[in-house]
Image (tube, rainbow, N blue to C red; front, top):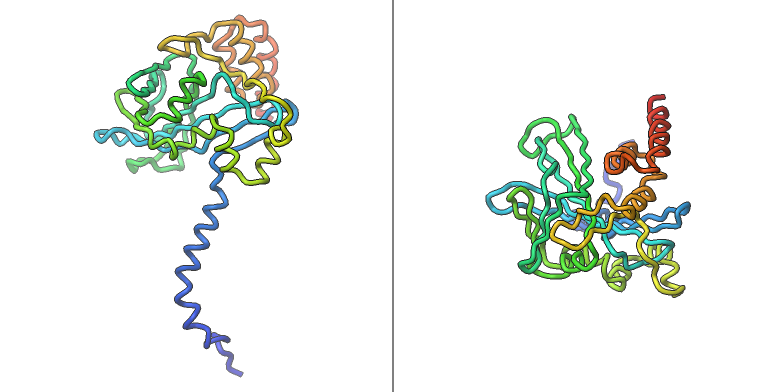
Length: 284
């Protein structure tokens, strides 16, 4: 018995024209599954909520082909949105050769510039399997993270004439509504961008109005006044704050960073012990 490969031939004239539309709608649906403007996480042990914006890709000035990614994060005690005194900014670069290491980062807002050259946390990794933009094998990924005071961060997030400069390359930020950074400043804007599930999961205390949002508890080193806002890394407050940030970390690089910054700290002994424990575990 011969079977018909198209059991519903009468519907084919209607299905074929819909096929491109179906693929477009499917693509929009799949992309939409990952459209959350911020990454949210809650640490039940620390009772701590962390918010991190999605990376914003920035292209260098017209004479440069450099591409970097800019994102920001903040942390709050409990399941709430707070108003921290500083936020953590991270710049990421991927390429064949190093670009970010030992280089100051300058933010300019409305003609006022601030330079960040100390208290920068630098990390890197190399993937031999990836292909760089210039076609060569191997990609080096670099990241530099540093705190920015809330007042200046607010200007970076909301004002129009803003750019970042690294090694002579100028990266102009897009219009404020395209930056995502304002979501960490304005609670109502963040809540309107999130779904009901995220609001109830990560910001339950705000939704039932249990008092005023508490202060930041991320362990950030809050920069002091001045053009170089990262210059206060040797203070006792910075030492304690950094200890609180790395004490429960499972990343050896976090612990090594603490030892580099505060080699004579009273916390150095437990940090070294924790580092040895992690190294033994990873060596097994």
